[in-house]
Length: 278
Image (cartoon, rainbow, N blue to C red; front, side):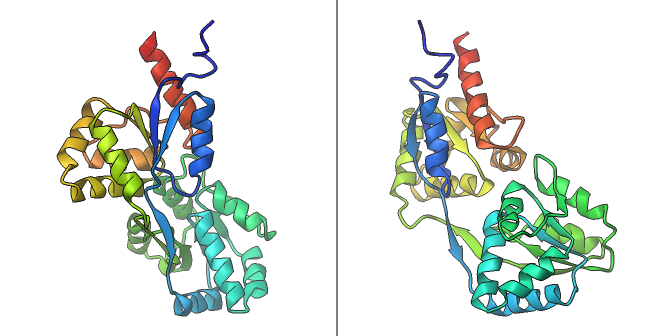
């Protein structure tokens, strides 16, 4: 009897660009039968921001924020790490427990919960800037001060929209997304995609899209990669933000799960290949 229902990705070669959770995503793919090509497309590099952290903590501890927004668990962790380094962790945690904390997704919620900091508002799925802005605009923040702990780059769409609404911002960028130190796996994946050796590419963030295309451009292979991604290779986006970045690059994702999580993404990819067989 065929093992296709239990292993819907059997015989498929999938490129995984996820960096922090590479093994977790690869394991999900492999349990579904896939051969996984690992090519982490980014790393998170800490930024020196002592002055900015001090100002942020000062405002937080004096009740100066109408809301404090966390975009990622990594950002929340970085703030707490910096507060501890400055000898201000206890005061920061106490202030956060009394603040209007808004978390874009489940990871900052979980990170704050580890320190017994409740999340007052958890942004609903699919956890994009659109949902976050809808939540913040419901708080009537015009003329008030809001703290934002960004992800690996400034969320210009979020910040610019809030500033246009008359919100005062104090923003923190504590790390940045950069290319991995070893780009050989990414170069290998670019060539493998072009040569038709990969059945699908799984994108779990918008920066992965930019970095893969950047590597292809450095190799003089951008046009060839783009042609393969738009004609033959199955392109998977974990959620709408990543899907929009692909679309902005002229690549229509083949598979986008209804829930922006790795498990549903793998299941949706399996369904796609199962439907192609039938």
